[in-house]
Image (cartoon, rainbow, N blue to C red; front, side):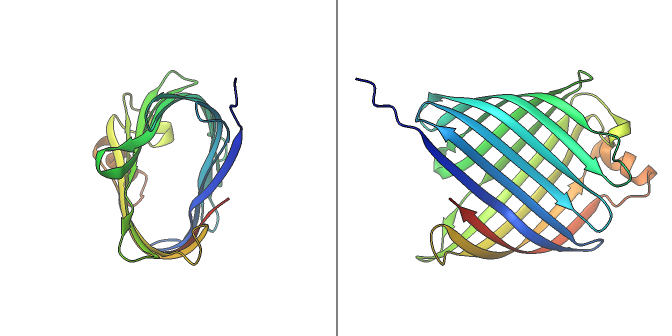
Length: 215
């Protein structure tokens, strides 16, 4: 007897205001899915909004459980900037994994193939450290890399940039938790060189105020 049930889930994290060295930024990331234990349809979106420019990304993914705590994800991604680079939107095919690594690290590695056949990769990793019954510290790491140089999009070959951050949240309820934190981002290698030629900063530090919500 097949009693597979369908569920739904939506997580907003990060959902925050970032006080930066340059323009302050509103940043969001939302992951939602519908499906059962083995197969799910995911919608992921993230982006940043500053005073006169920003960018947004959306992914539509099919996922299947391939091992305990690990899903294989296949789908498409679309990037849309606005402001000075509003005409540089791109589409990608996506192959990724999402799961729980040893020591309870949440890991999301992904490969992207653009509509111009450029290959890039991303790794996101977080870890929830319980300090008290309702107080949780979450370190966060994100890495971006590319196989080819794509200067029109500010992308160099190799490791492009990384972000290190930490967010301290207080869970008023499990579903609702305000937080504060810090974040440091830095462009590296050829990507840093492209940024310098364009008169852009290669590193940035932010103080963060936000809220984590799930439904």
